[in-house]
Length: 164
Image (cartoon, rainbow, N blue to C red; front, side):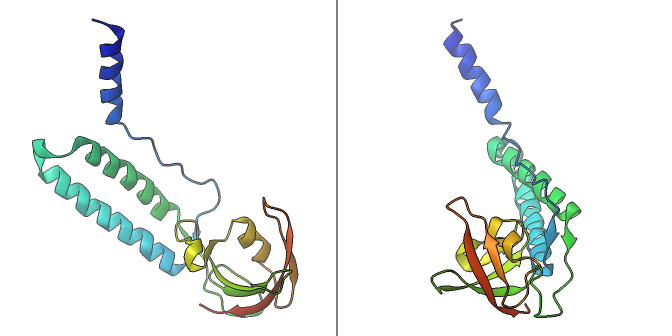
């Protein structure tokens, strides 16, 4: 048998073993909505997994392996979730706070600090541990903070803090 066939056989066997999703080393702080989203994702994956398993021999083995990997990841995320207390004051930025800040060009942006799995920058949901999140976390109204970005540091001013 040529080496080419051996390598193809190995590649086919490895296709059933998806690469594990990396779990962040930072604390898994979440908002109550973020925890609900994680729990909903686990329920969705469990349903899909049950459907694939019920198919028996007709099940897509790769799909089943991917679902099992994702279930391991999201179950771990739910298990390690630490629900951040809901902000009770608009004096200081906390996880869950909506923050309006202005950059050096007086351009205003509004973001909410959330957990890693809830982050969605396109919708203004920023991971609390991201460079922007770290700059804003703990800041007070009218504070100027340094946002340490890969593209260069930028001073931003907290101009409004809203409760969720």
